Length: 463
Ligand SMILES: *Cc1c(COP(=O)(O)O)cnc(C)c1O
Image 1: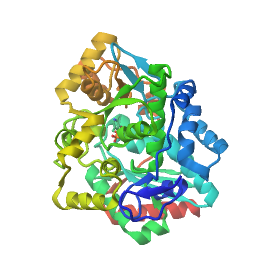
Image 2: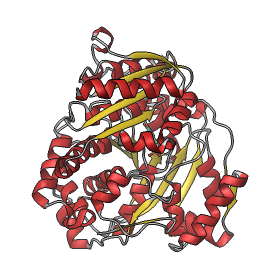
Image 3: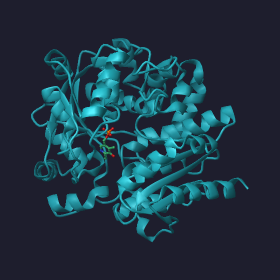
Image 4: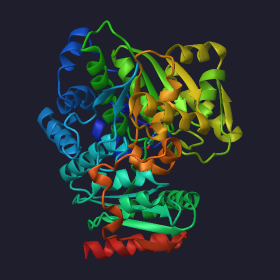
């Protein structure tokens, strides 16, 4: 399998090259040249497989001859043994709908499913090429810890994560700073999340520095993250249909950067019987406005009780747009250009109808989110986290929907307590966090200071 850029400016690359490249060198996003098809018999067979074996089957055609089946199986098994549920992503039946629990990984949020795999994949590829990688990122909370847990203890990777000092939740801060592995470097900056992003961007644009220190990113534009997420759509379908290819399923997906729901789109394109994909957003509703109006327009970010979905522009959306526009890179360049110049772009009503044939979108406010947590608790005794509650609310009235549960409710105790008066018992991974030893550097929000810190840390590590 080879990968091409949505903007058409990259010669087709292999799977490994696509993983190491992350963002395409022409500024676009990488996509497979075609979607491998899956027929009814295969679906039936796959529905009987345990998660890790299914993951190998789903991934192998996308990996091609780059990694052997046996090596891929080892990578997958290493990635999911750390999950604290034997099914990895179990499906729980509630009253008229189900919940696909994606939060049994080490940081109790769904990003672990992809980042555990990506960390092992990076290490494996670097071992083969004899290289090293330094991952740099800014986080407002959740992605940072999942990325840290994805690469902690790896021999060929160091990771530097910037978070705004005293501006992430205490649990989120501890999840990052209690990881004491030598290759993990937490930096609290004396500033905001935007400052962190600005610094990271400046360092990635410093090409001499970027090349010398082999800087890489782990954000949601990496194709391997999408691929790892495709697996659980197949898994959940098998659990709720018993593997009957004539039965379709509707998935409801709490959406921010469009990575998770795009994985559902890939599954559908491969032949998984997906009836609808419900795109659920919080007040930051750029995507639901797009599905319902055809206009994609950035507005200012609102802070909500589902903070991992507080985004303005969705980095993975361009991947979907590429297919919507009949895989024409020139058209994508025009649209993205209009978007960056005017903050807005639009597709025709015919195209919008095409979107709406598969996607159904709804923005869910704070009050409704809290109400949904309360309603589900009263009705099933099950505690939803606020992100998952957004998806459950958007699926209201859709019988049999599978709602993706993207975070463990114990991670968002304040919102849960506000809704139902009690908090969810924490999973083992979140227990005792506040008592553990921490390591973190507090630095000023200055590009030069951060750059010097990275240089000094790395030369001390290699010396
Ligand atoms: C990242 C995240 C989301 C949004 O997923 P995208 O792939 O960015 O759409 C939803 N819920 C939680 C808990 C998250 O961490």
